[in-house]
Length: 373
Ligand code: AN7
Image: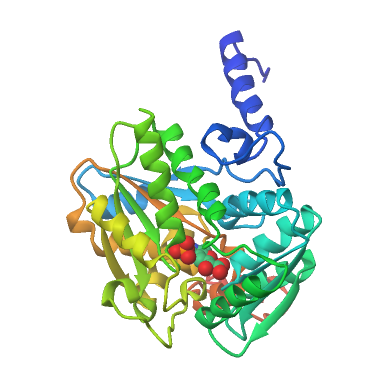
């Protein structure tokens, strides 16, 4: 069959393709909104511009004509939303003449810091909790060429150490207490509004250190002030039950959850997050590990979207409070990291049929396929 397009069709396609191929990273895309000047050396891996994907099966579970979409930030260059903050933090560190950066991390920050630091010609030191970082993230930090230091203690302890190191040694701190991180991360809110034409009614987001929820809110408020969106979303933050200081109001000394990315007991942006919840009339809620894993499997097996467990907390949370969603609302769940980051958890918690070591012949294969009657 001949393949032909009308002139209008081909020029529309051309525009869309051009927009994607001309993407120069989020600093160039949102330069007027960011604290950069013409002399800032932009260190970029063309992060941002991630897809906003409808999830109709999840919308169906909620009903009431609700529209649900996921912001799939796992498709950033190092596989998580951390790239948004890191392009800014590393560009500004380079502008200031830094030779080395340091961070504490549950994994994703370390991968992003390592990649962007090396890209910018700097060294990266990363402190991670011994035994609690997903395999893919550790692999990344090592291969990108960071100096990786595992600590006998959790993320909160690592963060205290790196803050002290940065205060006393010539290394720039690139955790989200560095304000440039949140500046970069706020661009995800810009992209949502640019895609949807307005802010969503609800934003559901996993919360660990509470930097991302604070950054999104900053982005929505700035766009709102500029008249780019007519409304502001309710910010719905979700923590894992075993690491939920924002819900209990108390520091968690020994946080525990299958979602190691958000295994954080004393969030650095605690006060900011409370202010966001109040200003947006939002809520913090906790989700159990089993609710997180249910949402994780649901996203993959029903929607074809593989995110990491921490990211699935946003969908688990939405499903938990679904009775509160207003009819006809538009809800965005933020999927912060790629599922490939944590293959161990995927294999361990898959409930799919998995036949191993079958004899190498069609009869044996047909039998496990259930075709032998
Ligand atoms: C996939 O990498 O803290 O509330 O050190 O990796 O802004 O902390 C990661 C956090 C959500 C929570 N989803 O975001 C780190 C780190 C994923 C994450 C969060 C993280 P914040």
